[in-house]
Image (cartoon, rainbow, N blue to C red; front, side, top):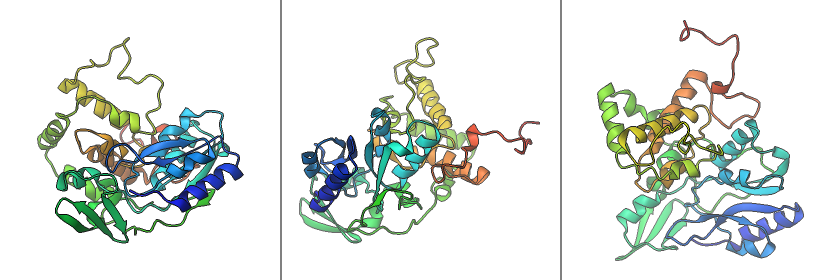
Length: 318
């Protein structure tokens, strides 16, 4: 991972010229290939700013932590869509934000790289055009960048953010066209028998330790008290029991219906590498098919799960 003097200078200028109270971006992290979200509040902070193929985390998650402040934020395509959903849900106001768009090249699969090349350190992966150069133990190894994209990024068709206040130049590494769709990515689930599908999720979710990393990283899990934490009534126990694990994940999945922007942050954050993109990709693909709706593309189009019209079909109501 490398910083960028040009990026730092641009962000510093925006911070000063727009008289922002803070600017949300990325800085170098303390673990390999994992930049951390950072809130820059002084001109000198921006020397630490970075942007590369490992800046996965959706920065819109942090906007609600700064109420009544004018904030700048670096947005990829999925971050921008998340901001739109937050505006629709009256969690943030557009006039309080300065959106700095960055065309996204698709984020890289850190877990896969660390598995295939144990011992990689920060700076151990160089991104040059369509190629990754990995500092492996036996010497440099060249890889095709497109082969190491996260699953959610392979299906993303909205990598360039829209309606931003400033658009940065494209990164020096290329963005391949999406080679699949969410429907294709999760299509194998539709072809399974019910018992087979249940067995798949039971196997995958058996690794869940109920750490709630997926909840904490999601820009739309902003309830002050989550249903998982309530004591009266106590919906579930703190221990990772199979019934509680299913209850948690499928309830959260339903809460995301018509809201999820398929950023993949939940799957990226999971310490057990559970393919949460299958769960959330499936519900997002179903909403797109049934309602011709994708979350975060248009502030004026209401979310299908929170909107009622007398013209709605009633074949499921009877």
